[in-house]
Amino acid sequence: MNSKLLSSIHRVAKELPPIALNSLADFLEESAGSYSEALKARVLSQLPNLNFRRAVLELLEDWHQASTNLDSQSIALALRSAAYAIASAHSALSAEIVWTGPDVSNIPVRKTEQVLKQLIQEAQRELTIVSFAVYKVPDIAEALIVAMDRGVHLRIIAETSEVGEGKVPFGVVAGLGAEVAQRSEVFIWEKSKRPKGKDGKHGSLHMKCAIADGNNLLISSANLTEYALTLNMEMGLLIHSQSLASCVSNHIDQLIHQNVFSLLR
Image 1 (cartoon, one colour):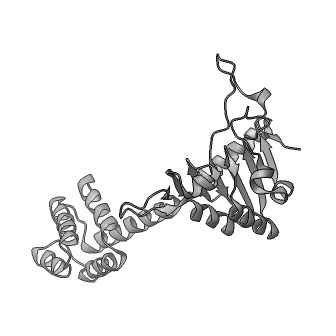
Image 2 (spheres, helix red, strand yellow):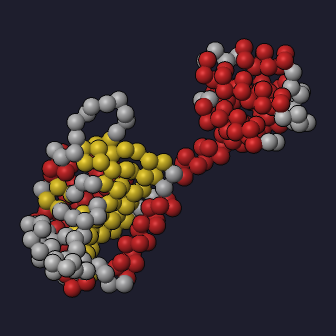
Image 3 (cartoon, helix red, strand yellow):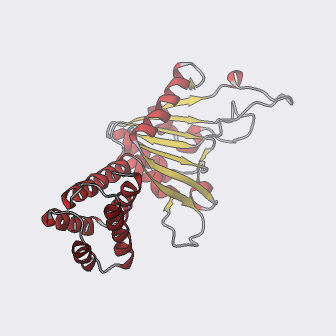
């Protein structure tokens, strides 16, 4: 099977909806024969959608030109295999655009606050939240308390007024409340462990992300603040991938184990 035919099979498996693809594969299996112009005509007659018909026509012509001994059942099997591989890859890694700002297009985006709340509400085992600033988000604080009530282990890593050289006026207690701070593990990047520039100023803990159960990962420009969740323009990605979420979680684990991040007492 040459690369051109494989490419056509992949295109059809990717473009056709499952119902149309299964119908095509069923028809090819039932035909149980080699390529013929009559078979091509019967296949195309079952595809009213012009784009689908064009993709399948290219597949049939590539099958004919390949001059192989592949019969229609082999093509059907290849289509089903390609569709399964595409679906498996999609379930292993998919992403959604996350946005705070004006609604200006038909591109599907999800609101930052909505996504963060969903991550918190659906977490069952562990939740890690990292933010430069934490301030005035009572709904998020309440959701975190509910999550901890059902047994979720919460880690918060944030900049604080004590170590942030005045870059943020509030810490976790002021931003999320005493109960969240007391019941979670709060980590900071101590000033003594930060690199300094030529002007003597220290680096900042400026990353923002949330990881739930090692399966879902939110990376965003948004801080954990009221303005970032409701008023600013912020953009990020909600990534559904156990591999990537676990990788980021393990990276943070190493920052803790190697004492780059310190537990706030």
